[in-house]
Length: 259
Image (cartoon, rainbow, N blue to C red; front, side, top):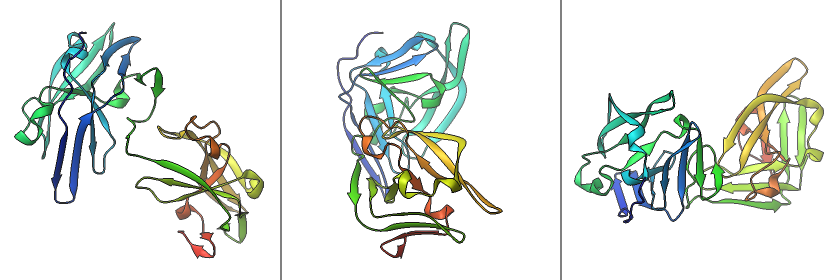
């Protein structure tokens, strides 16, 4: 690979309620597949789009295009035009349609012509500088703020109050509802059991899930917690957070949040 010299141009596009932004990223971004670096750049472009996860784009000199084989698969975006795809092949292993590009986009997106993107889940590892990142690219405009609160938070399932606290941590995350994290000491843990479900948030880390059982009633994955959160979000470590829609009531200062 040879390093691209020029960064891409910034794009801001809006059509009705839909918006797309594309701008240079200051981070070094690397993609690893089958033990080898298949993309390494100091001038990635980051595309953010309403309702979608952010996506990194790479200039072709920063990508091992010699490991790519064009496929017959094509797609079409109403804003960016026709999408071409490549399969990634390396040392006897392949990842079908793992790479795509808009080779002839409309004029509004001319700056991304020929740049390539990888399907996040079809390669093995992603690095921002020297830290591996999981789930999807991080949005630099996405915030996660955690604040302690003395507001009363009560969680009810069936006839039981399964959590009650005035020491919750309130997590405010861009574009998402407020989440109420409760210390296990304020949760009736006898009603909860760890499930096998896990998920990963690139801002908070790997989540473990809890199911609830009260009498004959059981609710799968009613709550989650980050037992070992990422360094950027340490305050919620071990705290329990309930889905409002999976309990009968989640009240904050007497006002029902959901259910």
